[in-house]
Image (cartoon, rainbow, N blue to C red):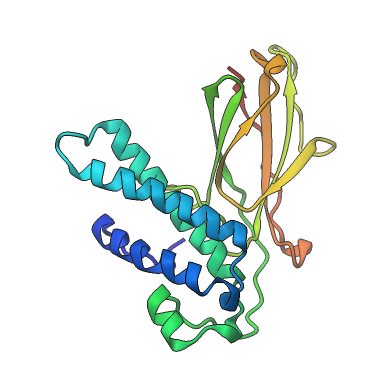
Length: 223
């Protein structure tokens, strides 16, 4: 999302995160920040505080470290968007908005009907762990939640290799996620079988404004 909350350069983001993480922790009760999100933010900041300096040193800036730094930033930004979305507008002070770089939202602006579907990416990490990533059409550079959605509804099925793929998301088991990137541990008895995934953007307040399902599933063998 091009919301311009976060600085573009990593060095500036490092400064930003160093300010907002303790600020949100200190003001968590007043700003309605859930305790679980406070703990998750602290954990993500600890990862960033390790990976970012390593990515800046010639002695430690490997391709893997740089990728892990980028992923740590994306995870932190995604969690901050969730936290900011939960803060009641009525409690935000000028100091809050200046510190967090939050512009005042237009009051009573209804969210429109979502007309696009998520771009789905799957990666098998081994030992039955699958990595899910979802991207917004027009913003495929990184995983993110559609700006008019509360999260993603994911319907999936695991079938033996060689089985016909499911024709639609209907009648498949599903679950909801508010994050655009996560890992899921699957049953080890399913190794070698195929995971099929459909997804749609969801408006939890008004489902008539949720997006439609992806028309064909994204699939990958579980390893």
